[in-house]
Length: 298
Image (cartoon, rainbow, N blue to C red):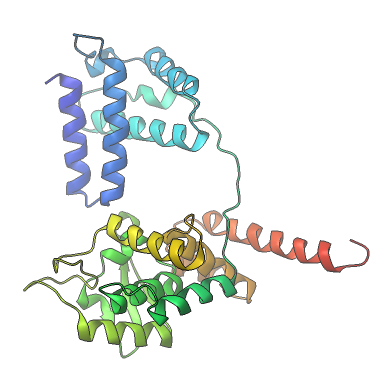
């Protein structure tokens, strides 16, 4: 194994030790292995980390541009390589992080598509009716109720343990990015769904996960995404709905009904208010659409 391949493997192992989410590790692994393949000549070995300079990285980025990748994908790949080189500097393999010299592609400022409150509630009502006859309807309804009722990330949802639930006061302890903890309340519908699910929950001995799969083990990130896509496609006819759609809807609907932006920031677990402010733009867009449609002078 080449030195670069060894360093990539060590970096990915370090992410796991730091409790990075499965999704993050999987994405970084994919991007860095592609980076390794680009630098490996046919039948040869890739350069050692010390031999990789800014020119090499710019050539690599140029190749990505030629592939027609989106700016968002380019930014993610550059971030993965920068993180690798930052780790190499921290571990004393390199003296400087040359990846910092590569300019990050600008991403277009696109507003997320947000379900209306009627669309979100209609989907949850249909899930509650059990029309799909799935094997774990109580689990699936509780999953949807928490995604929309708490605005948590799918990684946070599947990481929930039984000890994180306070059904009496209706709070959950959520471990977000960087393993930061926050308390998030949930409503009566979510509480009812959780009580029904927990009464029927099937799990292996010593399994602490709130949400389990058909084997009684912790439900994976991918498993939760699959559940959401299945119901959204079958019941709403919209395969584009994913777990994060409910996070967008949660924030936008709270803001539309007068919730304070900083309170929403706390509920979402955003480190910066600027991240939360994108929902302000979504709400303003909705307001302008109503104005343009209804006002006689629009």
